[in-house]
Length: 357
Ligand SMILES: NC(=O)c1ccc[n+]([C@@H]2O[C@H](COP(=O)([O-])OP(=O)(O)OC[C@H]3O[C@@H](n4cnc5c(N)ncnc54)[C@H](OP(=O)(O)O)[C@@H]3O)[C@@H](O)[C@H]2O)c1
Picture 1 (cartoon, helix red, strand yellow):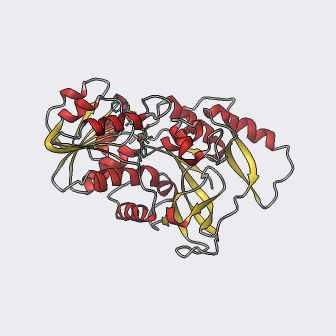
Picture 2 (cartoon, rainbow, N blue to C red):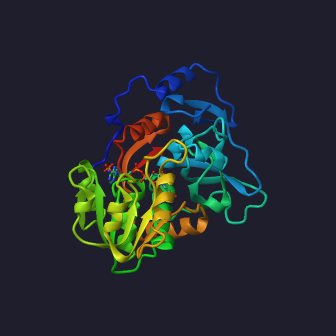
Picture 3 (tube, rainbow, N blue to C red):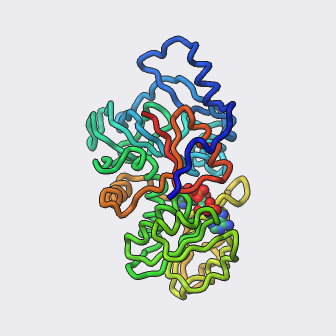
């Protein structure tokens, strides 16, 4: 697997660099302050800046984490842009983001615990989903964290939760995968897909993957038996039928995906970046599920459940080594805006880690 480095980013006037240099002349930060990637309003990465802000206060059921690493995922981009708009109505802020610090995936050490926290103590090494993980410290609900396996590095744990539990739930809770089944992962080179290929293998499936030309080797290295290039073939031309298809790319007509299913097969619609500004990929999934009501096969959509039980299950695969996060790029916190820019460019593959300290 090739490792993209920050050298691939050539922007010399990044907000990160500008903010960092302008802060060198500022007074020394107070002990309760921290550096973080912040956004004042919805927009693209040009809205982001590296700021010195107050450390988050924690609620009774939350912990404060000293962040060692964070992970970047499409959800973080959606919350940054406020698109699709349906997200805003889901409680993330109608006019502007309620959470000024970006980032969901986190790994670090617990430094403070709320009065009602039962599962964690100060000093625990944890990973999961935080309220703003692109920062030196982040708060997180104890229900969205698990203990990090000792043999898993902080950056590997940090990139795992959002994509890993989505892949796991798509395969198991929704897709009902059984050992011996044939599985097709469409969008196998991305965040969710890179976990899905490995997890489907670990769960006993025989896995094929669809990805872009540059990422076919990556998908093979993750354990896909056959790989198909979505830039070179029409998905309808894939030979063979599948018991389970995960559509993560979201760009192919659902009717073509359905034709690749066995009569009793299941198509799980995980996501996609197409669609109108209001519902995005969710609109396509809702229509597809409604249209398949009388078909012999099953079409399902879902929103992943962010709960520690799923994260602990994922931790088991990470600890056993049957799943290894495909980290294809690493950035420091000061370079984090470049990481978001890379994701916006569409050139990102696998997972991107933000190394905080
Ligand atoms: N349902 C949920 O709860 C849930 C949870 C997490 C994420 N999601 C959604 O799932 C989607 C994927 O997330 P991600 O983090 O995996 O994104 P990602 O890292 O950007 O991966 C996107 C994948 O789609 C592939 N792709 C692009 N064009 C394609 C095409 N025409 N045909 C087939 N594949 C194509 C890409 O392949 P190449 O780059 O190799 O071309 C890549 O493998 C997003 O829309 C995200 O919002 C949903």
